[in-house]
Length: 333
Image (cartoon, rainbow, N blue to C red; front, side, top):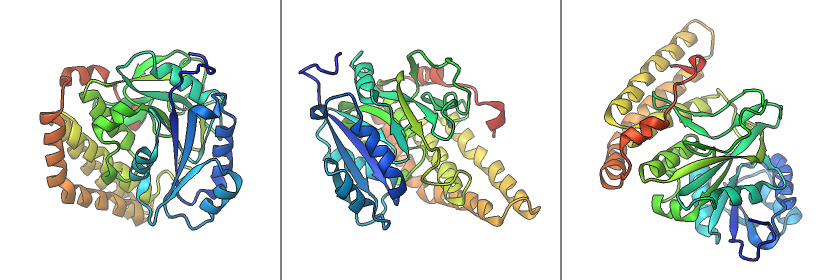
């Protein structure tokens, strides 16, 4: 499809922001440079109650951006859902506030998703902004232990991911979705707040028969963990909690049990590291809080599991198993 096609559908680009004033100029200017004509896309900023002047800066510098300023920080998942409700597009693109899109990003994503009506989402080729020679994500993978991971994470970009391919899902830092799929699934699970919401969406979509593809020509530079520090208590709490909740909701029984059981050794290791003085007690407390949060949400997530797997699943678990990968040894839990 040509970028000058008069029949191009409308695309809505959603950017969620929380105190990212220092990031927004690069992000939104990358959208200004898109080769796809402006008539065929709109930009929506969802601001999670920033107090750093983000909204005022965008209103002043980027008047073409629609803004929804929320009264509190609802997180990445609910923020994007608010953008989905506000959007007019047939397709919805997600771009992190700490990311920059290549000029032909939207055009390439549109071509990729229109190759088949069964494609619900497209994954970008995401490189680290700090080191663009290395891969941040070439699509999401689902490991056999229920964890999610970024395909090619931290690998040197030597052309090994230069061909389109089917992937389990799309990393939310730079993704492209079909509205029909989002409407069917109800968008992101807002209870996850942030992290693993993209894997959860992909898993639910897969159980309903949707597919995801990776488009290497749709390039994004991402400041990995630019909005939250990797390894921080905040990061550990949400990642550890959400990886278990997502497996409990979507996985077959044995895998869900493995995911729950796998949390306890990680809690123990965090405690040992704190006791030995290797780390402060804060990471260990984050793991304990994650475990407590899982227990508190267990009735809710089991009800959700029944809805996802008993009432709406149309694809057998054997198909999901075919898409799973072995976790890298360095990340094995």
